[in-house]
Length: 449
Image 1 (cartoon, helix red, strand yellow):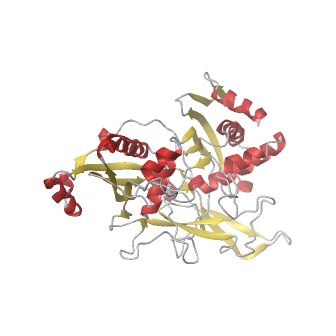
Image 2 (image 1 turned 180 degrees about the horizontal axis):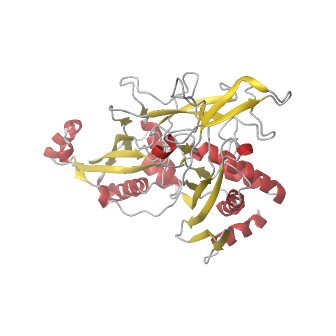
Image 3 (image 1 turned 90 degrees about the vertical axis):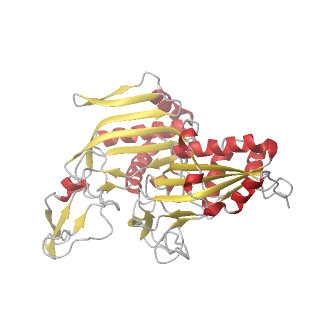
């Protein structure tokens, strides 16, 4: 077993802000609950999850030997990790969480899947998340010796700079836009263990106040986007209304609605990333079938497997979309409908029900990760977004009654190399502005896969 030798310790105190809901699963209970600390009984992020996130980001741009020198290796003689992480702890005051409904679909039939086998969940299951905007803090210790100080410090700061830029994701359900985070605060202190006074400080380092540390976040180098090949931004407005049903009602008594659009923990009316992903996937599958390019679907959305070796990660990541401002949507009038028996044409007993929909100007965001032929994924995605813009597809439920359609104003594609293209609505038609041939190249790549 390798022995870690060091004469200096660099300590970072990091604070992370969740830019989207975060799911660190516990696999306990009847739903996918978030992990709760056994002592504080509050949500937390395991140190192993943080270490895995940093290591995964580092090994994508460095040689295996370099990764092993920094993070260690299970192979005997290749060294032990020179970095230690603590658990990420959320502040004790007013941690917001939310519970969201999910439905498992059978991809072959398009219907709700049967649980079957040993599955823990049926067709419908709920997942718990820490809400967007919450923060957690953890410490990083980098143990270095003499000549390795600059090399290891540079490597750690490269990773922290990527975390600051939002180029890393954490936890599960990432393809639904869950787990987007960024570094919002960073303190740093170096302990020289060859110095007696510094050794004394190191012994009591956990008791040091933040005043003993250096504010360091502004000293991190600027980092270009590495994880994502493309980012797509879509500006739209609702035509009529949208409704993605939430898990439960929070209104009771006379005048309460029976069905209401989903809201996040901050009470914003949203189209969740999972719902947006499902609608876009369905349309991309139709187009891929017509083009005989079904292999692109697996590259874009991945596939499940009994093990990690059998499964495959996709490269599309969707984000939650706020539909409109909360006050306006709270004041929307209730829509009343009746439930018809399709066999008799009569009204079901107690068949009158009400619903509250959402309206507004949603801005959609989609990321394409830099793996699995991102160009061909973008090409197929552009065709699906064209159908969204021409209103040949809808979002959420109620398409038969005119709900779920949006009017697209602009689609902007941004490449990792800062190239961009726009599809802009002018005089009722969509026009492509692609001087750097991003979209043209992506569509052309469909012929090559």
